[in-house]
Image 1 (tube, one colour):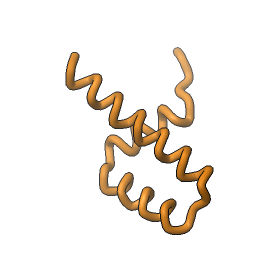
Image 2: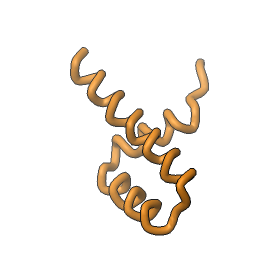
Image 3: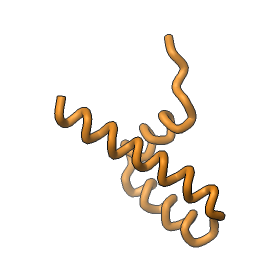
Image 4: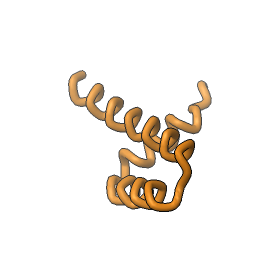
Length: 57
């Protein structure tokens, strides 16, 4: 079995709970630093991209 990356695990969590994703984004935008925002945006893009890909299969 292949281990998932942290980004993949976070993307799954963000995809499963959009309210949490929104709350986390608001928090990072308000109190985080640019590196944290970059990471979260990458994870959100992965979550949305994986969701869109699953819908088209």
